[in-house]
Amino acid sequence: MEPIVRTFEQTDWITITLAASLLLPIIAKSIYYSRFLNFVILPFNNKYISMYTKKEKLFNWFHLLMSIFQIINTALFIYFIWCSYLNPTEAKKPFIFPILLAAVFLFISAKTMAQLINGFIFNSYNTFNELIFKKLTYLNYSGIILFIANVFLSYVFINSRIVIIIALFLFFAINIIGWVTVLRNYQKFISSYFFYFILYLCTLEIAPLVIMGSFLK
Image (spheres, rainbow, N blue to C red):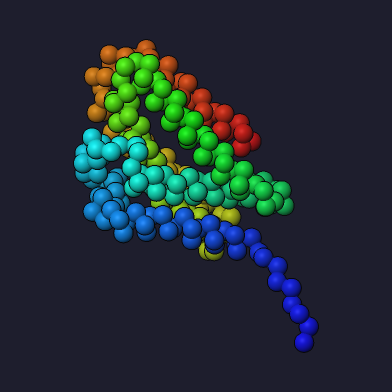
């Protein structure tokens, strides 16, 4: 009887990654059940934002768990974009995903810290904290969309560009809803600091996306 050498396929580490990320919302649901129920209906009901904006805000375990879940699935989704639009041999090198994961984590962390520093500079820390919390909440919710897309891209429609386009459309739709909510709730604040808001929009919202797009190219 000859020994058989088993080679680990690409889906092995992807399965582990997806399963590990799925544990995070499961833990969040088991500890914060009512909060989780309000979170999953976020695009259709603003109750979650209304209830939790004034509470722990950014630094609470539920928000951190869902943020890590979103970061993992965002990095994995970007990896699938690479696999679909680049040379698959190049894209599937084992070190690509950890680099993407670190890049997404640093990108979101640096952007959040820069926004909080702006809050200190303009003596509006609480307002900026609430604004960031609302935007990140919608971003974290879009992590659910990316998780579902990642499952399809891994096992059903492997590296399908149609799935990627649909997921991107839903991702941006959810975050646009978040932006509209933020702009509507902070009209007076924005009008009082309109010039600084435009500066903030260009430097901390548009410029990072341009840099990320250039990096992906």
